[in-house]
Amino acid sequence: QVQLQESGPGLVKASETLSLMCTVSGVPISIYYWSWIRQPPGKGLEWIGYIYKTGSTNYNPSLKSRVTMSMDTSKNQVSLNLDSVTAADTATYYCVRARADTVLGAVVLWFDPWGQGAPVTVSS
Amino acid sequence: QSVLTQPPSVSGAPGQRVTISCTGSSSNIGAGYDVHWYQQLPGTVPRLLISGTNYRPSGVPERFSASKSATSASLAITGLQAEDEADYYCQSYDNSLGGFEVFGGGTKLTVL
Image (cartoon, rainbow over all chains, first blue to last red):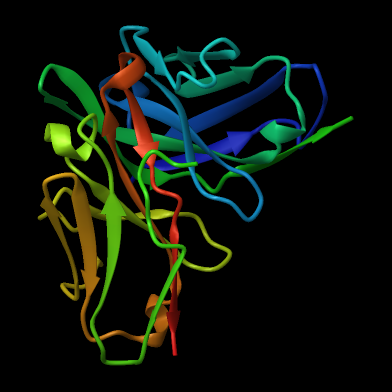
């Protein structure tokens, strides 16, 4: 049974870097894709990006310039860094396992299961 | 503004059938990419409801079904129950701007 647990500061100052960790249990992270998805308060879902065991990443174009994902297979952890945050980055951040398929030459994902989420507030 | 468009809200009485639409374009649903559906019960974490048109994780009732046509997709719920009241999101892949995953804006289902 796969379990995901996000951790990190719940409060980040504007212009600084948001850093979150996802600790995975029940499966080695090296065999799956992993994504981060966020949800601002009262709003919908936004995909941030994915990372795969080879170090391959793909990020949402709207966040690409500020996002870095990495993985530590020895600790079975996936991490997210988001630079230069603003109030618009206030959200609950979910770590999710991504199931992948190749369709028309593209890696396409769906998400199951989800972590409990880490609420992050950006303060001015 | 979401790449995939969903109605903000739908409602139905217990026992009825409701559908939630998800409208995309030629760079996502219309290009042939699958649509996946998620359910978020009040105050909880989203969960995968249906992947593509035929995969339901264990525990998801057969009352939930999905379909896709041209540039749109639909989630149908039959035999509506009070416990189905939740937010529902569609998700697909968009091949513009190098390719990325996209979500609909979400639909709030109210059981009357």
